Length: 274
Figure 1: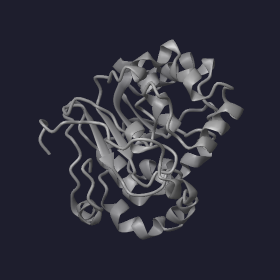
Figure 2: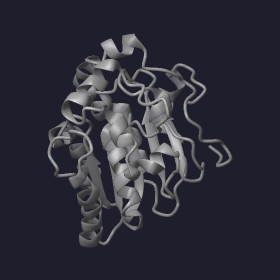
Figure 3: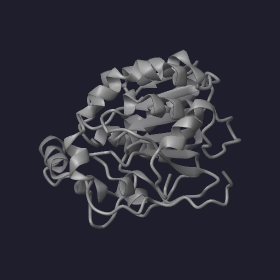
Figure 4: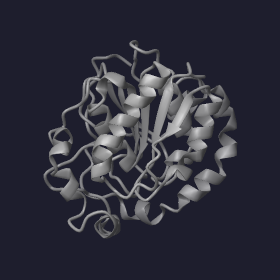
């Protein structure tokens, strides 16, 4: 995959397909089928032991990351979770605590930290990296609303209502318009390797919000199969994450599927952003 290839957001408009939203519980089936992905997971590259910080999605806590954490530990990484409990949306405490967490891991290990954020956790990872950039090696987002438009979030109405109930009565727009979200609003990208994984079958975050415009020498959008709530239990996703984390520090290259992953990509339905 040449560096000259443009990195652009998916052209989808509007909310996720209604059928995809209704079928989000299929993520439980994806989790049950994880053992079938064992050959794929075994072939995934081992890591170099650098620290990896995992951030959960909205309404989820560290327990939701247990499969991802166990897999990455088995691959040789020094894996940590954010330690702030359930993700109930952005709180003022996160503004200082998250960058401090990243700096602490960097200081105690002597190595730069990779951030992996699922759903809203991916937005948190971008914020944390922005304020501790010298400590960050790479960022991976999983179905995260990393691109904002003036029209506001295109998530399903039920998800917007839940956010208003749990996090802020004005909804996600209240946090999106905060000064700390300026870079997201203006689509400014950090000078750090960033891989945004998205699914056309995601019933929560539409693909135009889960992808970015960026620099092909640092940024990429990677299409994966599956549901939103199943991303952390999806064998293909886990394998892609392992591939991205295994990139040598300072010598990042865009994703090119190899081995069994290449076989998966051959059978994926055609998509202009794949």
